[in-house]
Image (cartoon, rainbow, N blue to C red; front, side, top):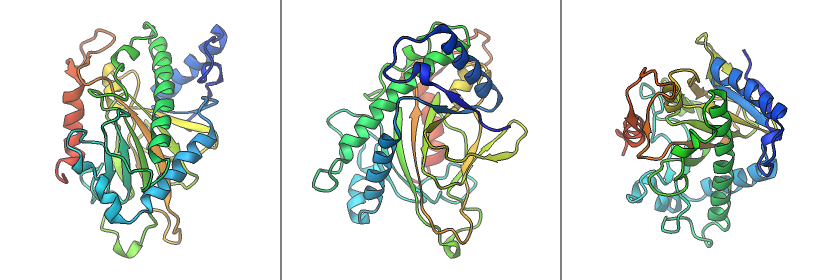
Length: 313
């Protein structure tokens, strides 16, 4: 099964009045995607290609800075906001059975004023572009969460009400910009790839890819399928906490980024917006089935972070 493309134009950012028939089509198509494979491409979301290009360009400029400058913004140097900042290549293993992933990243977990950022002298526009894109992704995420609630016959704000602190403290929602450098096959460790097999932690993820390939998603048959970049679309996927929240109605699928062919010396970029409920939100099965016991978001997310980061930090 291919990942479907759904036109989100009727509920795009900036549009408040949604015709019932148009919204009904979106609900039907997203329901099918989220229950059959857990991924969907959305087009006409209101986030424009120029915005995506801007964050990819400024990110690449950051990743090309000398390492001694990037180290100043290492995630481990910011204890008050422990997931904010730069993570060097091979410092996480999203599949713990593999060597460290061949990628580096910069995480943004808040747009509050007291967080360490590269100054304008170091990289002009970096903070402004990141914070603006965070806000745009947050706005779109809330619309997607409303559609997901309507799919389940719930009040439209059922999921939104547990995501009120995005971009502030006590919520782990993260904008992550990623850079996969060209691969020197002679130095690759056995079993090492660009990003190990994993499923995401929270509720949903928004993914913006550059044109280079490599991303694969596991379908319901247990086979990995290619997920190419489709210009003008955003890839949306269900994460594990949302699957639990919906008693496995929505499905969270494993995905990975493979090594490129030996002759391919191109880098790869992507940007992901990982949406999490507020830290103190209690996640209970929304169908009242008690299939899973209630759990506090922070406890669940911390358990997952430890698996990927605990051995490195």
